[in-house]
Length: 504
Ligand code: SF4
Image 1 (cartoon, rainbow, N blue to C red):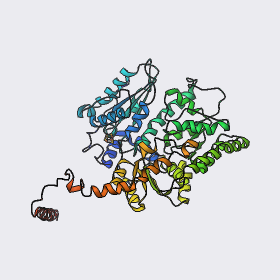
Image 2 (tube, helix red, strand yellow; image 1 turned 120 degrees about the horizontal axis):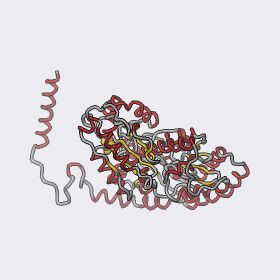
Image 3 (tube, rainbow, N blue to C red; image 1 turned 180 degrees about the vertical axis):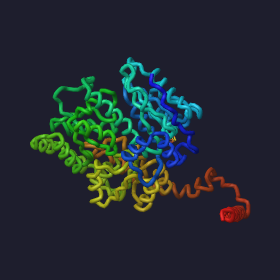
């Protein structure tokens, strides 16, 4: 057993948690010995206009990546309320697997006993017959308190142990939290592969030249991309995030990597360390697919004749699918999945006017081609978009359809603007190659047709459920006591004046 590290754990920061103040938590984490971790997170996931996550707890991204892998067990270390929310969400999304939890209280946090408890839990869980790896995730409070997961054993009886810090005050989105774990796993697997023989990836065929996709894609999309690669003599390597440990070796053994989702900074660092060239953007529409195939052919050294033959065979099918499903609408796009620019590009090529695309993810070189393509067509591209920016853009653009996050869709519907939830409705359909080409037209047409119905609903419900009538229906709300608001306003003014006098 390792020796317990000297206790460097400060008291739990006041007001800790999502809304406890990023600076306070960050200062606590650095004081507790996590400077290096926090600096790396800040470099990999630069912040934007908003300082705190505006969607779900970021750690959900890491948790989900671990839960989706075969023979991988995930243990959370964090406040019970955070763990409750995270496990609830993971089961809502069909985890069908237990999530480990090491609880703590002020005493175990302050004395360093929490670290011992985590280490004991890892030892108890490390059964080689059941798992290949155990992932331990430090949430906000244990990260801010410096719980040193790096001191956990690297492996126990052949079961790898991976400890990561995924605090909401250091990782802006759940999308990037997927990369925190995927990157840590790739790093571990790359080191193993460098040291000697490793398990053979499932379905690996000697001599195959493969491309590794990076990003959680709609299930049919890898097949669509595989159909583009086949005529170039290429196949798909296992995707990142991986579905089982040995997939990591398969991905690292590819000839090139397609960063279809452009925010996997840590994962791409590992692929680069393994000597793999990286290709950004994705095969959307005719132009996007042609450019992507060119880039893949260059990275994988595909002969020009094979590339030309592949394009001649595939691009006309995509062109025909796009022509058969034109889109005539003004659409704003916002989301936090990382595929927003690709969706906007597909819509735009299909004929839609796309004045704005906002993504909660940061700008990276792997979406540069999409950004330039969109900007050349007058689209405003906003990285690290805040909800406020997305709403403002929607109000400004007055679109026929707004694609966005839950609060944006809610706002749009209040205003009678047809809207679709990006994650469930847009990310859940094919985007790439011939299948993706016609996938959006039907849903856009169905939604924009509903505009007139929305307008009727807005006028029918006018005033119902809006701020000071919330909770009251058509029976009318109770009468306000006469002069109530006026008296309250005067009281507030008097209080502010008194406080100002005390301050002076
Ligand atoms: S772990 Fe997640 S839910 Fe908990 S305080 Fe941090 S960001 Fe919020």
